[in-house]
Image: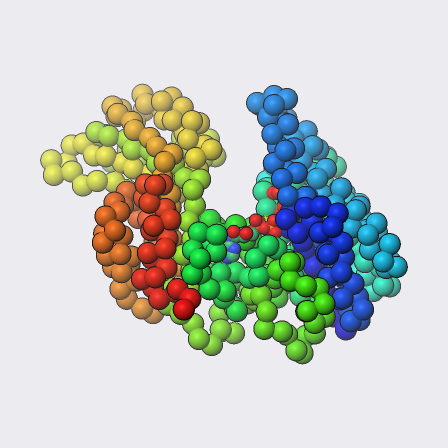
Length: 420
Ligand code: ADP
Ligand code: ASP
Ligand code: MG
């Protein structure tokens, strides 16, 4: 017998028929003797609609009220799933974030989970009740206002619940049957990875593979939560109930690096479309200029990612290129304009028509030539690189958005990741 947390994403609960299918997955686990907590997302498209309504009501709105609105999507699916489970003769009840309570920070719209007192929940699960918990939401610890965890946040709710009840596994059911070497919607030849290291998954998620929210992987890594990514569309009866001693070879297990026997040099290719490029031309090349550019951006809470500074033969003026989130571009330009008196002269160019493509793999630590292969492959396709950034286990390049798919597919082939 195991304690299992099962999370179902938006497409998996898109209508009542699909919720019925989800209930069959839950029933399989209960019938197999497992104790279950379920975490649900809002129906596909529901959160987008709620966000759009907030914007329509007022472009600039109170983040606490935004949270009150967007958190409602998950309450609908939690209630509906509990109803369906009860109609199948199972003992289930729904829980909203504040009822659990899932306590969060005050960063409304992208709050972090601070604590989930799990004893009561665990006692109920142990007594055989299925807890159906709303993902994506919690309650701000001091003000007791509803807070949401940022888009895709139900993954994080699920991992946090798994930690709180000390679950044996956190199963993330979605519309693909695992984590692939690249987004299967873009790369038809992508392959399912039976296992992926936490660190690689963390890079994949933060570099654009939205199959898991970045924060959920961080939490999983710190607390060593055995996390699996599975398809909710697989027939519920075709899968076996979770068994700690006999884990089926389905989906993807996110685990420690040393659990992976055949480690590839490159495990995956990710892309992110939400980047924007800013270039400051003819900036004075003297000490302190970078601080005067990036200081005000940091103060305004604008994250800068890639930075390139050109060398200047005469040592007088330089060009500085960097990237910010596309949604922050207008604000970044405004901050720079206000800081101009300190920075000195510059001309500015910007574009949101760029995409960041990244190759990721823990094997890069011990292999040379990964970057060279990336640059060669892109050059063969005539794709120009605007900026580069690297870490121990990833290389990212910024290119024109028009070449995103070509770049991802070509790199996927070049690193030998294509399926046969
Ligand atoms: P859910 O609604 O279940 O949370 P998401 O849409 O958030 O589902 O995440 C699943 C999607 O992630 C898939 O449909 C797929 O297009 C996308 N995705 C991006 N990169 C990858 C990858 N490397 N492996 C699998 N899926 C990926
Ligand atoms: N419903 C939320 C969203 O669409 C949270 C989630 O699905 O994970 O972002
Ligand atoms: Mg998701």
